[in-house]
Image (cartoon, rainbow, N blue to C red; front, top):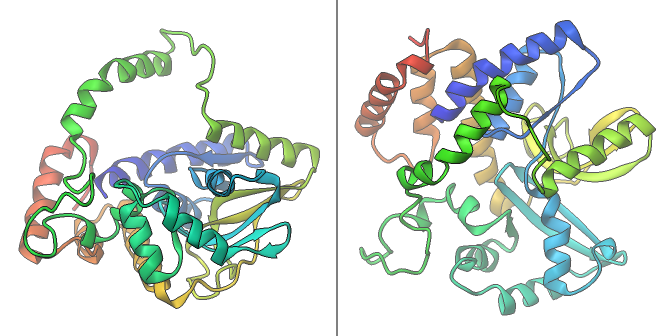
Amino acid sequence: MFRGLRLIPAMIDICRDVERLCPDAWVINYSNPMTAICRALRKVTNVKIVGLCTAGYLPRQIARQMEIDEARIDVISAGVNHCMWAFKIMVDGVDATEQWKELIREKQGGDYYRSSVEMLDILDVWPMPGANHVAEFFPYFYGPGDDGRDDGRYPYRSGHDFDERLVKDAERRTKLKAQGEGTEELGAPPADESASEAIKILLSIWNNSRTRHYANVENNGSVPNLPPEAIVEIPVIADGSGVRALDVGPLPESVVGYVRSRTSFFELLAEAAIQRSKKIALQCLLNDTNTLSIVHARECIEEMFEVQKEFLPGFE
């Protein structure tokens, strides 16, 4: 949440420059929290924006699981960034969903995917992009086990050691800072598949060549049981007219409540950043299913605003 409160005002400033200098340009966002950033920019700017993350790997991942060529796969999926659900798998135009589910249960029952398989068994849809990402939205998979003990069933149960991660990333961050300041050359781009997805989309827009992708865009009825203004991660078409969402139909009732809750969280986060409001930030935190105490939520808000006040000017 606080990452969003820090980043959204900066992203709005960038997009104000885009509006002024290159109003026909497309903004491709990779920054997290993806959903909140894209929603905030849609609320207060007129830029054309699309968000890219790991959803583009979904057909590739499923094709590998099924040991078939990716070109034969069509995945019907929807959700929000880091909490996306695959509910129909087509192979050569034939519904192969049940076959794929059985395969998943056989192949992906290891520790890392344990929570994903449990959700598939209970909710009857497959969560994407990975167990650790999806589990952050479900308090069932963090903290002690159901019997009060940390039973070790989920290897990411204790979360991430961000202090350790910051130390490991120190060299990379120093290099990125130097590149941003122009004191070090950019060099070759990283070998990242998500970066190539952006290039494919831009080429499709430029050449008016119709291609299919997975991206974060405004819903506009593509998923009818989610708010039309929500930013959703779904299949899209890119061509000369831009990037537009495909109609995927309603999310299954077993998961749509979780996703609606996340859209509310991100709507509040976007509004808190736009209005620079501590009160709306508290509303946002209380909207999170991992928040169990109003007292602790208030304390968290006050402490985080205090330690980050240099980066959060103007919040009241």
